[in-house]
Amino acid sequence: MTRRKLLMGNWKMYKTHTEAVDFARRLAERESELPHGPEYAVCPPFTALASLGAALPRRVQLGAQNVHFEPQGAFTGEVSAGMLAALGVRYVIVGHSERRHIFNESDAWVRRKVRAAVSAGLIPVVCVGEDLRQRELDHTLRVVERQTLAGLAELSPQEAASCVIAYEPVWAIGSGLTPTPADADRIIRSIRDVVAAEKGEAAAAAVRILYGGSVKPDNIASFTSRPDIDGALVGGASLDPDSFLQMAEAVAEGV
Image 1 (cartoon, rainbow, N blue to C red):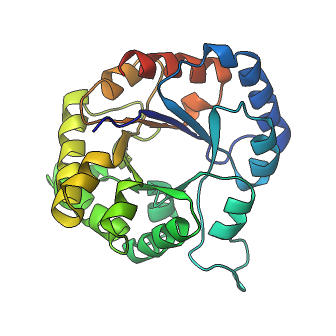
Image 2 (spheres, rainbow, N blue to C red):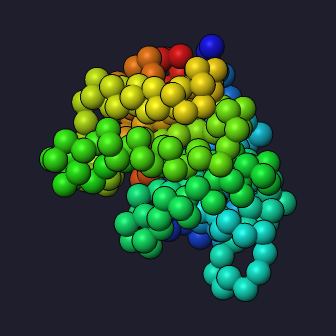
């Protein structure tokens, strides 16, 4: 099965809604430079979702950075999957390492968020990855297996197949350090094996698994050209339209 490459920008807590619209305007002016083949998405802060969604080029999907697992209720500061869907959001990041480590989100919460996203018609991007201590203890595969199983636990094989998984080694995010492309491909292949064992070979063949962690225009192709890596989840390098276009070209060359 041929899996379509995905380039996704995670803006984290950067850009006002005005700045987000300026990004979209500048990208739209050069939309013809976006290569055909890969899929593209941008995940801004919640405050920019509506304005960015209205301004993005047609070929760039809208994503969100987080979601609550309840459909509504007294959860101050939270946003439901239904609210995101009503804004035209297609993807939602779930279980990012910053949510797990800074905000203490558990595997159980990630599982419930994934279920809520799928039920609302969103595509969850389930983040998995080890921190530096876990890597030094050679626990990487154990960690990503646990997180993958927890994230997909409440999904049918067909639902799991439509999800996206992002392998983001915590020690690499924002550090300028990265695993070798061969090492990242090996770990992502092991994640795909976990999906196969739990949800079946068809789901494993269909699910897209991205790499994330200090991805930039000058190194993205070395990752996305690997056979089991289906694209990239990019942080700071996705904030600039020129950089985004450079990465889009690099991803397309490896399709």
